[in-house]
Amino acid sequence: MSAATLSAAADPLPVHAPSRVWWGLEQVPARPGPSVVAMGVFDGVHRGHAAVVAEAARLAGSRGVRSVVVTFDPHPAVVLGRRPEPDALVSVRRRTELLLQAGAHDVLVLPFTHALAAEPAEAFAERVLRAALDCRAVVVGAGYRFGAGGRGDTATLQRTLGPDATVVAVAPVRREDERCSSTLARALAAQGHVQALQELLGRPHRVEVAVRRGDRLVADEGGPRRGTGVHLDPLDAGAARLAPGRYRARVLPLGCDVGPVLDVDVLPSGAGPALRVLTGSAWVLAQRGPLAVDLLDRLDGATGPGGRRDT
Ligand SMILES: Cc1cc2nc3c(=O)[nH]c(=O)nc-3n(C[C@H](O)[C@H](O)[C@H](O)COP(=O)(O)O)c2cc1C
Ligand SMILES: Nc1ncnc2c1ncn2[C@@H]1O[C@H](COP(=O)(O)OP(=O)(O)OP(=O)(O)O)[C@@H](O)[C@H]1O
Image (cartoon, rainbow, N blue to C red; front, side):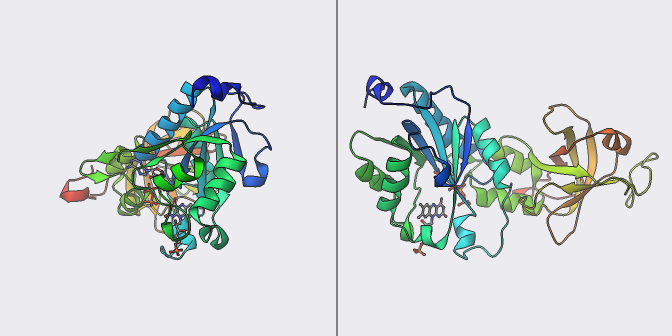
């Protein structure tokens, strides 16, 4: 379909309208305007995901329409019992932010339920992509499967959306010799390989925290040692459990892009990472709002994949 045909279609939401996040299909406006859709889970928004979202944004831009990411939460593998526990790399709220930063105009978060898992791929493409989102093109990674039994693929999308629709399969983005995936990213986080994780994500892995006030243990002047510092509470339980240990991290007021590099402990804990800064406590306590902790290096001897030291 030509750009002219697409722009001639009724579009009550102009392409320059502010970005939106729709929490469920019921929040999608009745006539959202034509779209280019990128589809998948996108936990952590790694470089492979970013390539898919960027391709959707590029196609949408060339056609004068909006790009919409359709994402599922919780992860189908968790809902279907293929993974034992919720272990997302980032919360779904942060995921939506990262998807918008990667170039999506809008994000549709669909609750993944057993009922949805049973829906055939064709029915999903018809109901959500075509009817709700007026989708003119779909972008997924090569080999992406969806729908009941995982039977939907790019051929299913082409057949259901018709010959005028464009279906793009993005070639696998790799880190070293491995395909980037959220599974790999979660494994690197769990092993504390934060440098490798940064290469995979294209940015440092971030944990957002609140400073626990009135709980300062011991002043850190005189050098870091266990039992000193300020506790930081993760803002949401979505972050995958990071390997306990000592890290070097850039600590930033949320929304800013400058801040000091501090030593941070990730403490063993039952419910996600609880953190403690060991240096710069005075700076941390002087901050008013929540902080972002961008993990840069492991300081206590973790080795990278293949035996390479991560520090
Ligand atoms: C619309 C839709 C999207 C899906 N997307 C994903 C996905 O992104 N990643 C994933 O692992 N499974 C996804 N699934 C789950 C599988 O495709 C499939 O439903 C699941 O493997 C259930 O298979 P079963 O019927 O053999 O149990 C999706 C399912 C549906 C219905
Ligand atoms: N390395 C990659 N290169 C290109 N596209 C990718 C890559 N990884 C995932 N995609 C695509 O990005 C979208 C979202 O990916 P999705 O989260 O479903 O897969 P994933 O990263 O392999 O996650 P998981 O490991 O949890 O299954 C899908 O369309 C998927 O095919």
